[in-house]
Image 1: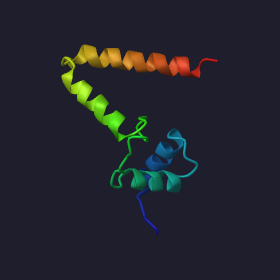
Image 2 (image 1 turned 30 degrees about the vertical axis):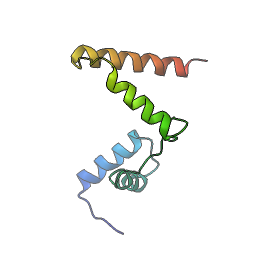
Image 3 (image 1 turned 135 degrees about the horizontal axis):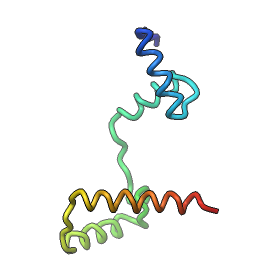
Image 4 (image 1 turned 90 degrees about the horizontal axis):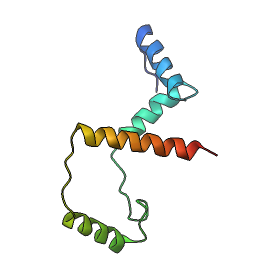
Length: 92
């Protein structure tokens, strides 16, 4: 398939491809199309559970747990925790 783009859009697409780690704009566009596809169905094992019963038990337990407030503090703490995990994961 051939797609014709204005030069400004083509240059932007090539920059985005490089910034995202793709070798070519074609690879980047193919990835974007795949990302836009219908979501795959995941199994309990794909999500890190031994089986569907374990997943269901975890979900039911979460329903019985106290609610949490999701506000800016929650998101800031979560971002900090994820950043710390990334740093620890990259450390030798």
